[in-house]
Amino acid sequence: MPERWDYKKAGVDMDRAFEVISRLKGKALSTFRPEVLEGIGGFAGIFRISDRYTRPCLVAGSDGVGTKLKVALALNRHDTVGKDLVAMCVNDVLCVGAEPVFFLDYFACGRLNPEVFEAVLSGIIEGCREAGCALLGGETAEMPDMYPEDEYDLAGFAVGIVEEEAIVSGKDIAEGDVLIGLASSGLHSNGFSLVRKVLQHAGVPFDAEVEGQSLAEELLRPTRIYVRSVLPLLREVRVKGMAHITGGGIVENLPRILPESLRARVWKDTIPVPWIFRFIGEKGNVPEREMWRVFNMGVGFVLVVAQEEAERTLHLLQNAGERAWILGEIVRGERGVTLE
Image 1 (spheres, helix red, strand yellow):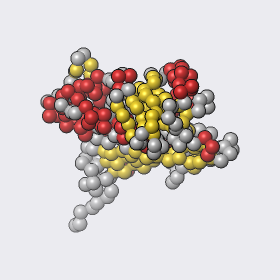
Image 2 (tube, one colour):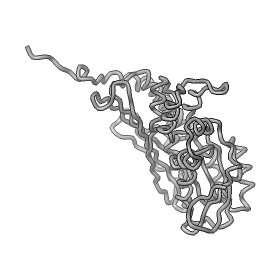
Image 3 (cartoon, rainbow, N blue to C red):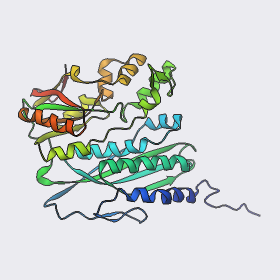
Image 4 (tube, rainbow, N blue to C red):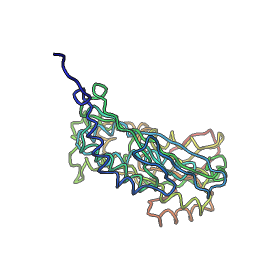
């Protein structure tokens, strides 16, 4: 008699994902906004653009968490990477002045572990709630033979809205403008291929204690979400440019918003560099220039404002709970960054 096969025997258990999603659907609904007409459970999410906009522009961004997932898997801790996923996308959308309004996720794995999936999805929900956007839908893909059985990957997609006249493009940045730095929460979600190799080569386990601090906690600390502090600021101050400092660090991300004939002068001594960057640099004998090209080095987000707006901007950001400071200035020169 021929062998009898079904989807579960082939490696895909449809019930596992359904049970987790059903259990968390109430939490996901807590992220919904009144503009959501159709959310989780349908074939597609539907979001109505509010009539409070005159000339609304949709802004979209997509990102992942990278090999930080390898650390989460090694430590069997998955409650923060979902928030990372949201942060990496909504912070990008924020850079042009857009309000993130909904988010979609993609979770792919070799074999779905319900506990892991629930922890990741809970983090996504928490991140959406913090960013003020709706978790409109997503996709869960169990793909045996495509991924190792116990591994998974994540992708996220954020959509925001901004009035056309309120787009922050960087085109009005001028000589003499001031750079405002907003502190990162640590490594965020970049440079982990280098971090992992350095620690492995140095024989430092991910769960080590370093100078009385938990390395695991530091490695998996989620990316900071800047939406709640920066969006209200845009209604009070004319911000000329914004940069999310991700892979490539300040030296590669800041030039993306600068006009061709202007250069950013960044004062390194003003930056409160978290201990984890010094630790990785020393353990791996990583050249300083490489550290600044790979990591955020303590700066998660940068604003560009006119000199006369700088103190007010700092005051508003600090009142919103951000660690913010004057990071540098805009000068004449070839587009790029000078670290001093």
